[in-house]
Image (cartoon, rainbow, N blue to C red; front, side):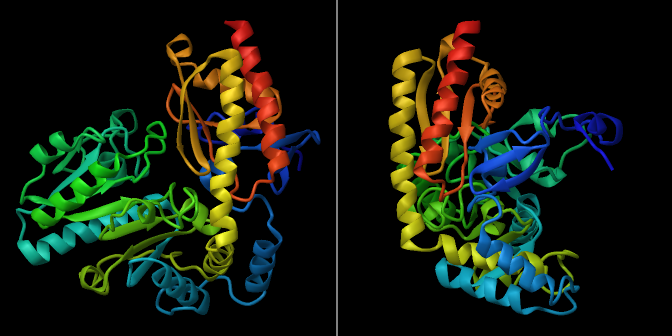
Length: 402
């Protein structure tokens, strides 16, 4: 059956507007479309393809598990899920893991757990959830309400209640908002969709202290920042602050859909049998691939390499900016970087994305003013240099067209 980009417009719900080209094959940090055109991938499936495309060890894990067991219900457990959960708890603050299929589902579980914990321990009055402007936590109705971007949550009717928002990195405003009615605070330790905004370490520590003061749980959404993305296995490890609940997805599966919620034994006990669940959560195929991805990422070789790759990106992007003067700053950490546009190019991030595609480079945007890179953690230096050479040509095209 012959399908093209035009087929999308004929058969798919129009909530996406995909690129004109259709990728058909990937290897490492390179992708080829239906016409055999090669692209350098700086998008990583939106911070998902943590080891690039078709990493041989992930392919091997998928094939091996695929010949054994594909799916069980959670009436049973399975070996890949138990191994992955053990490795996650061994590597983090957590004692317990809940598996889901996506970041949104992991965040939904975290929020439901926090509400149930507060109800059990303190009663119905302790129900407030505080999150932050420009935050993003998924597309379920609960998580999109907690996310701090009205453009994603408005237009679907009445929203879940007792959810309030605060300015990120503003500890004074946060202190005024939190109270003994707060059951949980949800935040990204590095805002992704909101513009690749790094946290002030003192802000994060202040949030932790105020959560402790008011008996509120601190939930870190590490769906985008986790599994090596910042050069730490999880971003909290570089901030000197430990959350009560952490969510993980995207890079966790290296491209295979999987999500996880991590927490302590004392908090986890409030999700008793029957209080929450997922048909596919803990799927053996997903957990087998995720286990192998975690094994590879959680090594000094990979994690230490992230810092060196970040330095190369920043060096070469600085040279591009010295020449074309389009960026206000380079934001982010590790392999989650954002080129924030200056006032002369305000609102034109998508122009850079489109021109990058014309130069056979895959990039992302984070809002209207930030071009985002979220490549493989093991992207070779030559691919970084080649991709940024293509990006420079894209920048030149936007500047010339102004």
